[in-house]
Amino acid sequence: MALARSADHEDLMARAQQYFPGASNGNAALSGEHSFVIAGGQGAHVYDPDGRRWIDYLLGSGPMIVGHAHPEVNAAVREQLDSGSTFFNLNDKAIELAGEIIEAVACADQIRFTSTGSEATFFALRVARAFRGRDKILKFEGGYHGNHDYAVMSTEGQAASDGPYGVRGSSGIPECLEQEVLIAPFNDLERTTAIIEVHHDDLGAVIIEPFQRALSPLPGFLQGLREVTAQYGIPLIFDEVVTGFRFAYGGAQEYYGVVPDLAAMGKIIGGGYPLAAVMGKTKLMSYFSQPDARGVPVAQVGTLNGNPIAAAAGLATLKILRRPGSYERLHEVGQRLRDQLQATLREHDVPGQVLGEGPVFHLMFTDQPVRTYQDSLTSDANKNRVFHDALMATGVLKPSAKGYASLVHSDADLAETEKVFDAAMAQVAQLS
Ligand SMILES: Cc1ncc(COP(=O)(O)O)c(C=O)c1O
Image 1: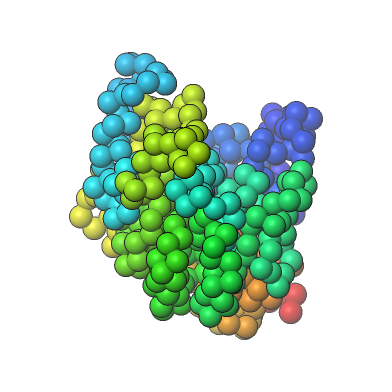
Image 2: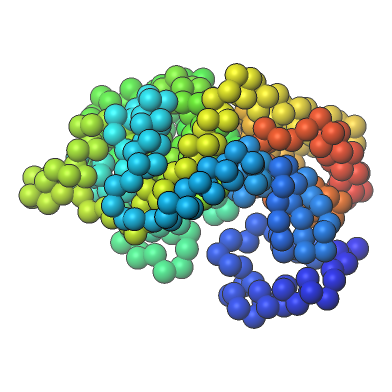
């Protein structure tokens, strides 16, 4: 049964239809008959304009790890508001946040701010190419690095390909980029190494999500990638937009014990405001201010880069995360959600498996082992849609992509979620 919406809510939906192509303001996290407008968020919950409540595992696509409208984050933002909202020039909050990140993240000798994670990966690739003096990059099939032209190649949702040349994942991307972006299979070190061995002299960078979407790296995969890139002097970029300050305070590089040359971060470091960053070893980062062999430095500028309100929100969020027990709780909540999903699969005899690590969880309706992007394509899309539609209809907001746990999901939220998972899985069981 479709969600009953008030006349005002229906009016908002109709205006979105009219104003935005595809009724999307730029993101389309919710779709189908149960989609709704979010009118507010408080802690682990979001509300529609009719006051209906959802337990939120979307968390703004990841930044809201301490919950919506956290009083300490709001207080930091309010205090900064009274001192002005943006200056373009250096500001104290951006410098303070830079110091905090550099202290926490192993690869970060220096940092540059951007407004979005897409820009952070874009500039990480640009500075790596400047340092190395080569144009091609290598990414992993199914990996997501934002929406710029180098990123939307052989990304999530696209058909499998044999590579090693990328396939454009969006209309409007120049065809010539298919020659510039090579792809390799995540978790297949042998094939990845073989591609790097053939193309190393053309490669300006290798970029990877160390935890790709919801795929955990197999033991030795990231270490092997680190070794082969170091052997050929190719900068290794970790896209830590998701994992940064989430898997551990020092990100995936601390969690997995592998240190890249550069990293991109976003989401958590902006505390729910537009801020992201590229960071890394001085020998690479210095190309942002030092001319390359042609006498040209790397161009990087943005009106809101290092925005003080976002930096204040980020600092307040990191302060909460530094408290003893934060990461233990985040990992515990993530594990409980994974266990609940696994139990409902068993109970309803539905073939599937639960992926994820730490505070990230993901369900796949396939009984094939899922280690690579191509494996993940065996998941049953119809069951996934039915399951997630049922969640949305009954008060749990989790998009069909991975879900995020927060510090404010309470035991009561988890108990309620378990019941909703169970009812949704019962609907899926009827399909099979
Ligand atoms: C791994 C990864 N990289 C980059 C991005 C792009 O970040 P943004 O949406 O802030 O541009 C995302 C966004 O979800 C992401 O998950």
